[in-house]
Every structure is written in C-alpha cells, then in structure tokens.
Length: 254
Ligand code: 9D3
Image 1 (cartoon, rainbow, N blue to C red):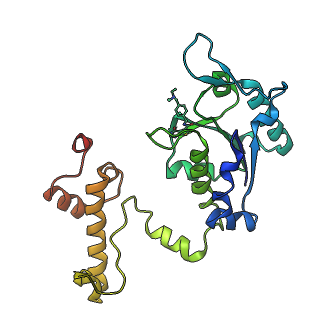
Image 2: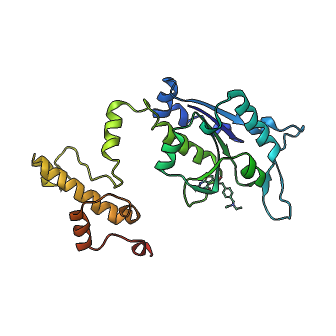
C-alpha cells in the first residue's frame, strides 16, 4: 500500500512513523509513506494556502488550488484504479473512524490523506476532490495531523504481514467486540492485593468462564454501547439482565 499525506506541518510526522509497527511495516515494504507540504503547491510568491471566508466570519479557509494541484499531481504520478484509491479529508465533520473503517481502507492500494489545521476547507475540496471525510472522535484537535497518524497506525497494523505471528494471535482472541478481561502477572500478592484465586487454580475451563464474565462486566460498566453489538449467548444475556440490564442507550444518559 502507498500512503500520501498532505499537511502544512510535515515535521509533526517525523516521530510516530519511525517507531514500532509502522516502522517495521515500512522496512518490510508493506507500506510506503510520503509526507508532503501542500504549501509547496501554492503558486504565488507568498505561498498562500488560505484566504478569508466568503460571506464573512472568523477563521481562514484553505484555498482549493494548492490542494487540487497537490493531490492530482500525486494521483497522476501513481496511477492506480479509481476503486483502489481513497482520498480522505480528516475533519471534525467527517464520519466516525472505527476499526471497521480501518479494515475498509486497508483494502485500498493507495490512500491520500489531507490534513486541515484550525481552519475550514473550501467546500469544493469536499465536493470534487475527496472521496471520504473522517473524524476520529468527538473532541476538538488543533488539526488533522494527529488524526491522520491515528488512521495510518490503525490501517497499517491490519495490513497482511504487518504484525508478527504472536501479535496477530493475541489480536484474534480479542476480536469479539468486548473489552479485554483483567490480566495479572507475578507476584501473586502485591502490597496485600491478591491475584484472583481462579487464575492460580489451573482449572482452564473455570479460567475461561471467569475471563468471559469479567469481559462482559467491564464492557457493561465502561462501554455499554458495545454490548448491543456484541455476540452473546442466551445465558450471557440472561445473566447481564439479572445484574442490571444490558446497558441500553438510556443507561448512558447522565
Ligand atoms: C468544527 C470546529 N471548527 C469551527 C470553527 C473549527 C475547527 C476545529 C478543529 C476546525 C478544525 C479543527 C481541527 N480538527 C481537525 O482537523 C480534525 C479532527 C478533530 O478536531 N477532532 C476529531 N477528529 C478530527 S479529524 C480532523
């Protein structure tokens, strides 16, 4: 997979992509990553990339020309079937990026990510340049850069071969849509706090049952929204109902 990122702050990307799984995937040739400053595509002598908003109001708006020129130049250079190229604008107005979205994007040959900063983007970029608009969650960031790093990290790690076999085995076991069960390691008693007896029992079936129950308990407590999507046995549904319900949307209203 090839990923091109367009930003006004290319230096922000120096750290994260030179570490860990993304670095390894780059070294193995699973992904090639290119960071571009779209200011380089501005044509006037002041390298202007933004301008006032028509109709007035605060804040600047990113101009269409440098973005279209930058993205179209890269797309031309790379070629690629339209179906297998995604041009994504990171923005607070985007659809929510989820694991499902990461898997979807991982099927592409070429991703082009566009980062705005604390300013709007000319609507024609949305209408005619971009194929998808993504947000990473309901909080205000100062730009799309960190969101782009999140997207790249999540996409790259699901590319075939990116994880070592041990890492992918662990991942599979947590794909059930529930939160992880509590884990402990030695010592068995730390500052008077003991590891749950069952984990020391050697009874494998009991351990599996305990872990499943704790996963459910935690999910209901921390992320009741996930329970609705999880695949539960009839027995699990009944036991959750017995101890305070499934955690419906209503239960999340504070
Ligand atoms: C909707 C808020 N805008 C009104 C003037 C201002 C604005 C706030 C933050 C414009 C851009 C930004 C920068 N954020 C992103 O570019 C961004 C983002 C985010 O803030 N939260 C979650 N996901 C993302 S993806 C890109």
